[in-house]
Amino acid sequence: MVWESQQEGGQGPRRQEGRSREGAIRMVRRSQRRKLQKFTRLCGREEGLRVKRSCPSCGPELGVEEKKGKGNPISIQLFPPELVEHIISFLPVRDLVALGQTCRYFHEVCDAEGVWRRICRRLSPRLRDQGSGVRPWKRAAILNYTKGLYFQAFGGRRRCLSKSVAPLLAHGYRRFLPTKDHVFILDYVGTLFFLKNALVSTLGQMQWKRACRYVVLCRGAKDFASDPRCDTVYRKYLYVLATREQQEVVGTTSSRACDCVEVYLQSSGQRVFKMTFHHSMTFKQIVLVGQETQRALLLLTEEGKIYSLVVNETQLDQPRSYTVQLALRKVSHYLPHLRVACMTSNQSSTLYVTDQGEVYFEVHTPGVYRDLFGTLQAFDPLDQQMPLALSLPAKILFCALGYNHLGLVDEFGRIFMQGNNRYGQLGTGDKMDRGEPTQVRYLQRPITLWCGLNHSLVLSQSSEFSKELLGCGCGAGGRLPGWPKGSASFVKLQVKVPLCACALCATRECLYILSSHDIEQHTPYRDLPASRVVGIPEPSLGTGAPQDPRGTAQACEEYLSQIHSCHTLQDRMEKMKEIVGWMPLMAAQKDFFWEALDMLQKAEGGGGGVGPPASET
Image (tube, rainbow, N blue to C red):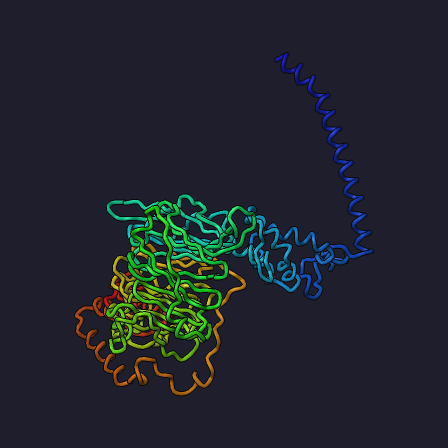
């Protein structure tokens, strides 16, 4: 006890000394605070420097301090623009865009090229070239911020979108192509990436996992292609159209850029073949058509001409050198005035779209010709390369080609389908084949269109600026999520589409969605003239006359008889949902009817889940 008291007595003076020191520090801080307050009052009276909480570009607002008569508020416009831009550049891209929509001043600041230059360097520190265009830094920053490859496996228990690994060196995503084991992505500076996926088997079902790693396959690539069939098992080789520097004379240092086609093995990324063209010929697109032993490479030049050459894929892995002949395709030989803008192909046909929006077709087999046109009257087996012109009401912007059906989108955003409709892959609401382009009236202004083996997909944008995926045709194997038995009209699929989705592709195992936004590229849709909107509706091509109202009435009577034949309320509800899927309604209208039927079914105690049914169409 004595020892404790001595210790306490020894600590008493120390505590008093510490208290006096803290008091002195508080007094000094109080005096400094008073001086600072006095100085700010003087500055506020002279220059009106007080923080303004209102919008800098709007009219003045009386703040709380101004109401008390303590001075005028500070405007952020008094700060140097470089300082404001530097502070704003640390915001995330989403917040930066939202801030730029608040007022005119922040819109100008957030849209400055210096802000986007700092953001681009933060997003892609390895990017040396800022790209091209009117706003190169803003375009580059948005390309790298929105790039992404999402996929959803059809098999297995997990049914949600997953995102693959994003290469840090990629400058946005321009094109992609899935093969048997991997995915290839081309960016906006011509770098082709090789994404190595993991394909695993779980309980006997094949499942795709996210890409585990990536490598750079080649640089200077313009375009690439593989086997055009929908089944990725046949995609053994990858053909890459690229630009390479070639020496003009052997033994000299002078070189010249020449286009070439390099062939890689998709499994390992090893180059097995290369062909180089003359420097006077420059190409911009490559597609494949035909069988493996007679694989035809179609090359589109910058002037809109089509050249072709034939390669035997079964001999590509043999180390030997030979010369192939490059010949002008008949579509450019017999129609020299045409300037082809783009082309697409499948195993037995090719589709050409000119710069004027005209469409020409090449069909190489009688079976596909019959499915597409409904007859063999004009088919010539001895002259399969002769192009056939399609009769269309307006200029065509882009198209999609499946095995035995196709889709076209014109300048007014209208969708036309043609070909075999056995599974309802044309989306017309029935299963009748169409030998001419037929308009799908309840769909307009799609972002992209894709045609597969026996189903079709459309990526569209809703009124809330969100995007949705619509599909029709065969739903076997889960290729139409939410519709396992398919649909004869375009229905909304149970897929969460990314906000910046721009392209899609489907294989037997997986659905791929590419996300990338380019501020300089947009679909130039036009408004339909008033003469075509008001009055009698324009008949669909291929029908020859407007739709018969008597036929529509008979179909409704048939639907009512089917509902009446059901014995229970549960069966009638399911039949009604199925009939709604048959009707050629808009996606929003079908969603409304399905939600209403689900509510009525739950109110009557019938149960049932929310969402579209698995209808048999």
